[in-house]
Image 1 (cartoon, rainbow over the protein chains, first blue to last red):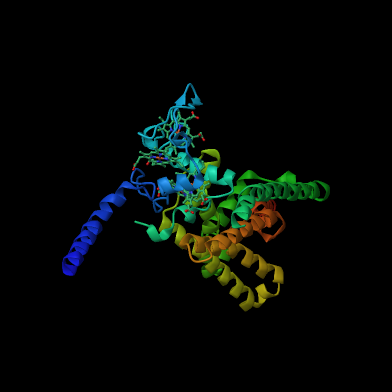
Image 2: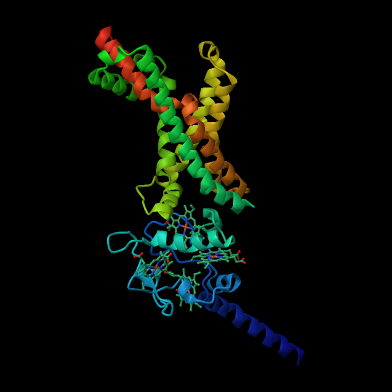
Length: 131
Length: 220
């Protein structure tokens, strides 16, 4: 009886261990930087859900915004689009804010105003997680 | 605490340093030109573009002047030093990212490894200059404490910058030292020996013209 319980426990643990990475992949811990050609930094630390919970951000539109007639929409959000879909890598006439700048303005901009959250390069791009 | 100081240094203090640098440079130029106008106005009578450029080109080309050929090691170290000193701050990716963030402007950046090596060339050259000042009697004779302090002040932003780039322990405080030392260097630049960055263009023009147009000789 006891043997069976232990066996069951081991099987459960094994299944859990095997499944863990798949489940974990659902969660975002860094902002993917694959879109940038020849990246120079580690992907920025960003535990998506944990960050927003800790920072008390309920409105997805703070980051996933939509602009209408040059003004930010109060109701619509764009979490189904990556930032790069509107902010191409290179800034230009029809793209006032390049992707790298869009990220930095959004992330560092809020941290600067809020007196909390990282400001310096290595706090978001730690070397240890390079590649 | 570190973030408060970081915001202070990356905002108001940076502006202050740039303004002091510009104002100091204008002040130095103004006082020098006033002095020239009062005492040696005749300089203008033989100031020549051709001889000015001849002198500048010879002094900005490695080994193009006699003095450089007589001191080959000094020449190599000096050119490497000046190139790195000017290029690293202007073409470092991390600096460009900051300008991009603030103003949306950006330009070509040095590759990481090249930037790493160039940042180390500067403190290495400073050590060489210091040893030279100690070892050579004719240089030691014209050296004061200020000269060693200045070499240290030049090396400091590069050493701390490299340290932060490596993200070694103490990254935060070292970054503050990096920013502050760079700002002190910039703000005091017009009033230290480093003012030759701006004044050298005029002194060489003057020497070149005097030697070329008056003495019919070379100043290089």
